[in-house]
Image: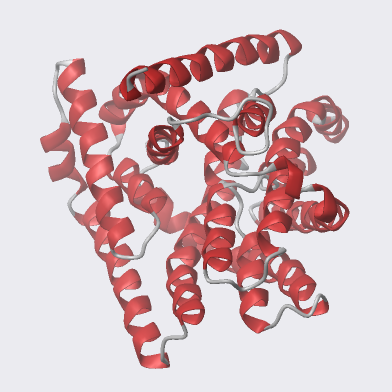
Length: 388
């Protein structure tokens, strides 16, 4: 059979399967993300029905999914709101980093994996999945809540921290000198600063370029610009997600509203592909031996993220129900964590690091959305009790 025909057949089967799973999730009243992840496990290496040729095609779709998720998230806020929020939540961002990087680093040191593995595992347990959290906020209608700007500011703080962390980790894994590592970090910081400056000072010119009365033209310009900036950011050792988010930040008002409405169906399609691809990267047969340790690490991380969310939201004057929502929204792990683990595994840091990170992330990627849905009635009762 022709190679292209196989890709179409496999990708079509994946999308139809996702549609069925999405319908089941809708009927059950839960987020479809855990079901998408399980579908990825079934289609991946070691699964029930491994894909033969379309995994590379799906990986590109997954990258686009993350870019679109962060682009639409950025469209919710403008540059001034972002800067104000970051200034007000810098202390919470540092607390987030300390509380959530520590479990991974301590775990690696106790296992005797060495300092480089400790730095890698610190990143695995630190970063919340911006993509999954954005989907949870959208699915549960939490985008307009008072605590959401606080959650987003923490996500942006994490993403900007990753812009420094990833070059440092890469330099450590490659055994580069301190000078070479410093140059890499400087380039990453300069890139983020330039993009943020453009969004703040020249946002009106970007809006003038993107704006169009025709929906087709508007969609092409917004998506094209987001992909261009994401690609440049990635090339300069900055997360593509950060670049896409900042493009969204640069657009505001009615233009942002129109662009968001056009992007939502496209975002949902590619976001589903991202979650499937995440499952494809995990071999179910390697999870068993490290499942217990991964579960323990996941429980500790849930507690530390709940504490982080509560601390940040309380500092913003948000009530207990909002504090609980903020903490729960920060639980999921995903794209950054897998990228970090992949870098460490490719460098031969330790053979058990990859399966442990995969099992850990899979637990939190699946449990985070479920927890948000399941505890919603409890949070509502807390809010009513506080109001009473």
